[in-house]
Length: 254
Ligand code: NDP
Image (cartoon, rainbow, N blue to C red; front, side, top):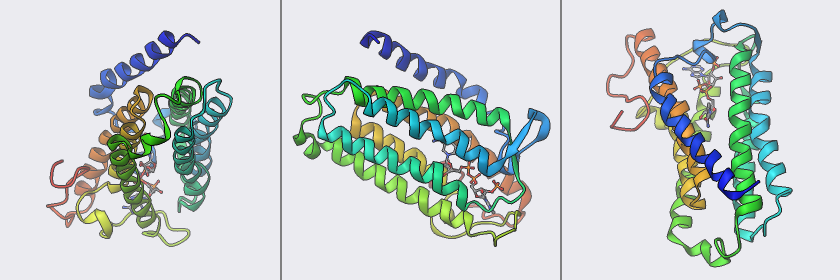
């Protein structure tokens, strides 16, 4: 593929994210507590999670590993961080969920597969084929973009994993109801798992300093900001005693 074509795809992908944001902010994504049968066929929740996240792991890895580029050492580190995140999200997180008997719409699964396919492709192809040693020499490890980015990445990952873990343990095995979470970053926001994920991918974008990673970070924000706002409203409507000072997504701000 010509480099200009590749970047056209990436910029178009960023434009789509910005364009659809005003639309998705009004649509409640129908999975988890917002699941509805109005979106057609349904699939087991756990199976849905594995299927929809798998392309992010596989497509990214195939395009990175089979790419015709230099594969500088630094890009192997980026590869490792992506794979670390997606081994958890694809193979560990769904199996830990206490989601017995719950289903999600197949339409969500297909949309997420498409989304993860494109993000896996643009990031894997970029790092495996276009990234060069000149761009990412070993000295890049002391570059402020790398240090700032990897710090944000691990900070975001910590909040995301800790918050996912807190949510999973709100239920005993076999339970499917909801309670008010109160530990960790839940004291500040309703959805620290989403906040952590957003911080993580903006950290990845800063660390790699490339447009495909920026595209993925923007898409993560576009996916998760509406979801956090909808969760927050749902908590307030469901629990009259819900802490009034708690924000939805960004501590002290929103
Ligand atoms: P949710 O917070 O909606 O749910 C996570 C799990 O916790 C579900 O099993 C849910 O059950 C359970 N849960 C949530 N709140 C409660 C509660 N109050 N009481 C009891 N159980 C609860 O997270 P998402 O499903 O939106 O996302 C899961 C992960 O995937 C997150 O870490 C998120 O960041 C990531 N993600 C990333 C995206 C990206 O674009 N990069 C896109 C979407 C998700 P139930 O399913 O029954 O509601």
